[in-house]
Image 1 (cartoon, rainbow, N blue to C red):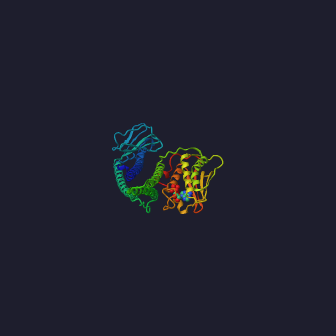
Image 2: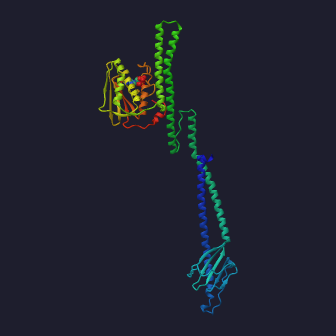
Image 3: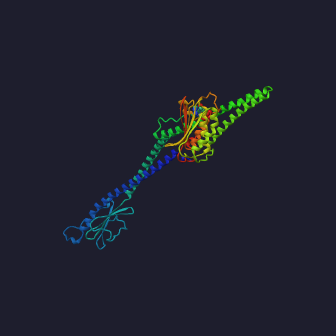
Length: 471
Ligand code: ADP
């Protein structure tokens, strides 16, 4: 469990790295120290060997200088150095009393005749072996016991120093890791408070290291989106309740007032008709909300098939002709030449066009008209519904596709609609990988364009859709 903490993982890695570095350093230092000490011993042995070599040379009868006194025996014992010398035939010439009993003539192999010594280590002894040009063999050696003891002290001292450095570095590392973790802890605390309900609080990015500041920025963006979604959901619930309250109070007041006294048949009929209108309004509202909920959750099945947008538009126009006639609004259709092939769910696209045409007729004016155009452009395929109606002021345009949004909230909606038509249309278009755009001028009219991609979009809903309630 503890190793899942980033802080402890940092500590463990730091400690492991330090141990490896310090051990590497210690081993290298010991090896260098040992090599240097051996070189010193070898130099010491080589210079002591000169005395033995001179003795071996001077005592040779072949020199033919009998008038000189016999050479002095080397005295190296006081320096802790032993020696031995053998003649070419292997017979021993001289051996110091300190020489180990195991010291033997090694044979000629392995010794070069050019006076270059061969240095070897035997147990705790270091020796320098020489072969003279005449074939005599000389060895000079000494015990390294005291050197090994010194070396052991050196290694122990180094290990103690390494341990002290390790402890100091780990303590500093722990303090630094704690310091590095503090901003993360601060971010965690803010996130916890936001999750607990402080939805408008944000993580303070000032003073954070660059990497953490960008992480905090991303988290803040996420919190913004969540807060936005929550606000929309709250608004949606409030708007839906508000919309339902009106027909429900119509039902209640109408029935209560009618039931308060005996009524004539005509009065009962009038009350029932008012109740039916209220119920019908509630039905439409609930149906629209259900469609939106299913579109949001991706449950609304979309059956995309190749279709001709000219044919879909013609069918929608046909459906609204009686309504247009009733309002005295002529409907013009300008289809693009040839079929406008798109991969769409014809029923849903038909629903979008019915919404746009219904609005174009409902928000028109006496003597006005509605034109439907289909076509292809670089940005996609389109169906455009233009009207010469009342138009929409620019400040309403950004929220026009929000749920329950009506340009004049207080005005009685001509069709008793709740402002969900454009929200549903926009959602359907999103599911098709398309979009809906609007251009409008108050007093002159509006142009709504439904855009479809030329190629079939992917099946999965967009990110916007998954966010929940949106316009
Ligand atoms: P509704 O179903 O209530 O008409 P919509 O979502 O279809 O709701 O439209 C939202 C609002 O946009 C409408 O209440 C209306 O104010 C405005 N609107 C939509 N289409 C038009 C249009 N063609 N001309 C003027 N205003 C429009």
